Amino acid sequence: MPISDELSSLAKRSGKNNSGFPMVSSESDILIVGAGIAGLIAAHECLENGRSVTLVERHDETRVGGLARTAFGGMALVGTSLQRRMGIRDTPELALSDWHSFAEFGADDEWPRRWAEAYVEQSADRVFRWLLDKDMHYLPAVNWVERGDFVPGNSVPRYHILWGTGFGLVERFVELLAAHRHRDKLRWIFGCRVEDLVESGGRIAGCTATIEATGEAREFRAGITIVATGGINGNLDKVREHWPGAPAELLNGSHPFCDGYVHDVVAAHGGSVTHLENMWNYAAGIPHPQAHFDNHGLSLIPCKSALWLDHMGRRIGPLPLITGFDTHDLCRRLAALEKPWSWHLLNWRIAAREFAISGAEHNPHIRDGHKLTFVKETLLGNHRLVRQMQEESDHFIVADSLPELVERMRELDGEDFVKFENVEHAAREFDDNVRRGPSQWNDDQLRRIQHARAWRSDRLRTCRPKPLLDHPPLIAIKLRLITRKSLGGIRTDLSSRVLAAAGEAIPGLYAVGEAAGFGGGGVCGKRSLEGTFLSGCVLTARAAADAIG
Image 1 (cartoon, one colour):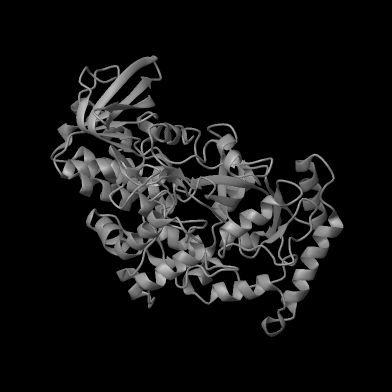
Image 2: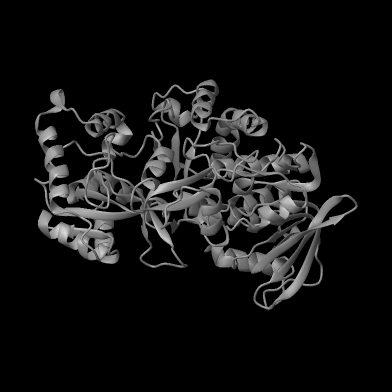
C-alpha cells in the first residue's frame, strides 16, 4: 500500500476529522515533533512500550519520512555478518580508532565521544540485525568510502546499502505503525508548524503550534516531548552564518523546513546546541531539473575517473581532487576556489560505469527492488541515467569533440571563463600518463583509482584507466557545493535526553536524529565516516524510547 494510503488509514483511526485537522483532544504520553525517520522509529518503539503518541509534522502526508525518503540508504555498520561473509575483519575497536581520527573531537566533546563508542558497539545489533528482523535487507556487497586523505578514515569497508533505499525504510515503518497492535494510541498531526515549547511544573510539557493551512493556534500536551526536526542545512542563511568560508553560490540538498528554528527554541528553554559549524555537505551538486523549492539541488556521486577542473578549465591541484577519500576536504578545497563552481571532464565510457546520483529518486532499481535490472546496469553500464541527465540538465553537457564541448561550457557560463587550451592541456597530460602503463603512472588520481579497484565492490563501479579523449562522446558537468546534513545539534546524553549548558538533563525533553547531531550534539565531529546518519537516527530514537519506557 502506498505511504499516503497507509497514513490516511492511520489518520482516520487516530481521531482526525474529515478536514484533516485533529479533534479536540491534545493530550498524550509522548509528543514527537517531526515525522522523519528518527521520529517514525521513536513512535514505533514508544508504541511497543504501550505509550500513547502524538506525531506533529509540518509537511503533509506525502512527505512523511523527511530526508530519509530521498536518501540512498547507506549505513556505516561495524562487525556485521555481511562484512564477515566478504572477508572484512572489522571490530568496534578499529572503528572507534577510525572515528576519532576523522572526528578530531575537542577536549570538551564528552557526549559526542560517548555516542561514538555506543555507535560502534551497538550498530551491528541495534541497527543491522534489528532492521533484518523488520524484514529490511541489504545489497550483498559492502562499499569502501571515506578512506581518508591526510588523516585516516575507514580502515575497512563498512558502507551497507539497504534494498529499497531510505524510501523503503520510511515505507516499512509507516507499514509497521499502521499494523501495530497499539495503533489506536497514535495520532498524526500534519501541516503543523511548531512555534514554542510549553513549560509546566519545572519540565517541558508539550508545544504550541500553528496549523499552516488555517492559521489556527494549537497546544499539544504530553509527559515527554521528543524533538526530531532534522538539522539546519535547508536554511542557506543559517548555513552561511555557521560556515564563514561558504561560497557565494550554494545548492540546497536538504529542505527549507530543515531550518534550525526548533534548535533556537530548545536553546531558549535552556538546551545546549553545539557544533553547528560542523556540516556534511557535498562537493558535486547540480540544480535539480524538477526543482521543488529555491536552489533545490541534486547531489552527484563524483566519478573517480573524471578530471576536476576550475572555472577556467585548469585541473585542480597539485593534489588532484578525487572522491571516496575525504569529502570534508573536497568541500574545503572547492570552497576556496576563485569562483563558486567547478567542472568535471569525462567521457561516456566513464559516466556509464561510474556516474551516479545520491538518493532514492535516481536509483529506482534499488528503491523498487528490481535486482536483475540493477545487476544488469552494474555490469553493462548505467546508460539510462546518463541519457536522462543529458536530456534533463543543461549542466550535463555531451559533445562529440573537445572544441564543441568547451564552446558549450562557455555558453552555459555566459562568459568566456573556460579556456580551450587549459582543458586540452589537462586532458592530454592525463592521457599521456595513462598511455605509459601502470608501471610508470605518476599521477595521484591514477594511483588512487588503482587502489580503489583493488576492492571488488569498487572494481565494478570504477573504470580501468584509458585515455579520456580517445573515447568520445565527451562530457562536462558544471558543479556547485550542495548542502545536506548537520553534524552538530542539540546536546544529548546516551538516553537522548536534552542537556543544558551545565550538563543537567532538561526534564521532559529529548532529541533524536539529525536534530541531536545524530547523538550528543555532534557524534561525527568534523567528518563523518559516511553512512552514520540513517543508522544514527535509528540508534538515538531507540535510545530515547528505551529510556522513556
